[in-house]
Length: 469
Image (cartoon, rainbow, N blue to C red):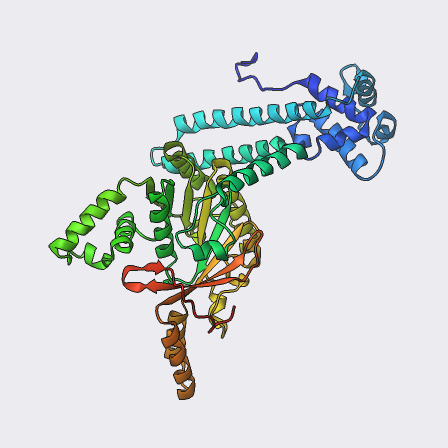
């Protein structure tokens, strides 16, 4: 505590002075800290303003030293000397520039600690003085949002700029893959998906799954969760649409071939119920969690992810769906909102060593086209929404789309043509890669879809063709 009984604010005037001195005598020292250090990170506002002035001068190609800065310094006293004399003293007392980066990181870290002190003090006040009708969840989400911002700032300063370490990490990952004769990560439940997306689910990556409402995005995800869970991979499904019971019914329906609608309506025979009972017991042993949610910001979702990882370990996180995630800045245009949401989600996955899959509803513009298959612009937030996704898989049910076209069509010849096409692709589903990090985009795989059990199955004798590559 300080003299007024307030928590002592972490800071070091000496380190701030030392860094400014380094920069004043050797302008190149700024390059070691400019990527993460800002004026507001300085405890002494005067030091922050001197740093800002130096950065602007050096950034514009000019020299920043006591002589060149003098004309831009305010007429103010620093103790018993002028500001210009104070700047000159900083340069005179500097002895080396070798420690500039360490000085900068120390200043940044102390700034983060001050932010943590501020949040902790606010948390105490809120917890003590919150009105009776205050929702604990909203309080936690607000505090988590502030911690997330602090964590993001800490990550910026934590980047290791030494290429040797980066190369070594990449070599280690490649070595692991070489020994296993396979990519690192968790496999998809159908080989076709890994082929389309050029690899398995990688920890730290964020994937998009795009499709129209009712095409089977959630069904696809439930199969992936069951498959991965049976391989011992922890899976968290954050469901914004289906109830937990509906998800559990679907897990078993897909596995044992019994309709979920008959499970929930009491229409199973004794033999069928015994099969369902045994499968449910097996499913209950899997490292899977299903949670209902709605309207959370990324910070709120991050709380759930960290809690799950702490209990089960890193694994696959599925968020259904993107539109339900509340943006931090609702006044931004949609593309900006989506860009920020996906950027923050990717950080959450990287921080927790998880692979994330976010479900996206295909936008309304796609209904105006005469071509059924999804394109990049159909993604939530448009093409810009794809920027922070490592890969995006699009699901298309050609038979469903054709049936809708036939219903609206009035010309007999066109109805006949569409009907013939429908017969050829009945019970099929197509998957397209809208984005991949390394592989070729636009690749396609056709699989079978059994609507009774909402189950996707491999289709080895794929027929190419009705809707293009």
